[in-house]
Length: 337
Ligand code: NDP
Ligand code: GDR
Image (tube, rainbow, N blue to C red; front, top):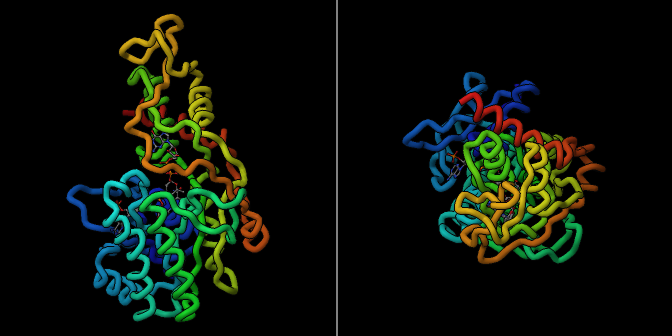
């Protein structure tokens, strides 16, 4: 039975990847960090089928111990401080976890189980102020946030351990991927959750940041399959994983309101203090400068040709199905409460 160790198993991707690996007959170990309250919402349904190992990407000894004890065939490094706005507020921590943390886990592999196959969760945020469109594995990086900078470090240290020590190390350059398990602070989930609340009469307005940025959004369940496929290839390599389509945040908001069958109005004159337009009675979406970022990534669109050709991977869920599924899942959860 193959053994896989996932860092970040309590996160969105970690939970989908754990399910996938269990379905493929793996013994799954998940690295979890200590918290004062239980943080297992996303993995509660599989908790008796996975083994939790204490560890933190800022602590070398815990990583050494995890690799030494588990002796995994595959390691998926999904752990990170992953929310871009927080990276301006906590740039040092973001660099330590999201950047140097990758070196620590690679060092543990090099010392204790050098034939382990390693997956690094790299990001389209590394392209930042894009140097070409669409972005491929060869597009130069120009990160626009401390998070993006840390991910560039994580990407290159992965390439470096492959070239220096012959570690089977792959970097998956994944574009935004979402699901009903997405954290509430990310834009898709913030919108789906707020729209669901509006539909149920629990909220009356939606306050947004930059509506003009464009993202290549896919479904997380599809993307974890690409991670696994990378580690099953004869040689380690880096891959862009994306849908090849891009949509604006404004379009995301419109899709979500339409999925919930609510009419919306963009902010203008004649709005009352509850965010309802006085004449039409429609829910208003407004701009709140607190959600704007010091530097923005305006446009991301990935070219997944290499992943399609070499991995046989294709995204399955469309943008509108993704948004609709998130809105309806949020409505169902709110109703059940
Ligand atoms: P989440 O934010 O949902 O999950 C992050 C995980 O990392 C959580 O399990 C969290 O644990 C864990 N973690 C955070 N800090 C530490 C630490 N110091 N030591 C150990 N574990 C830690 O992220 P996603 O699932 O969305 O993303 C997975 C990875 O993929 C991340 O590296 C992200 O940067 C990257 N990525 C994500 C994309 C996306 O669109 N989702 C796109 C491209 C890359 P806890 O639950 O305790 O907080
Ligand atoms: P991103 O995701 O920064 O691309 O990083 P996020 O969903 O936070 O933002 C996407 C775009 O939406 C704009 N936006 C808002 N964003 C949030 N969070 N809240 C708002 O109210 C809002 N209004 C507009 C943002 O400005 C941005 O342009 C995600 C993370 O998962 C990273 O870890 C990952 O590496 C990248 O995707 C690929």
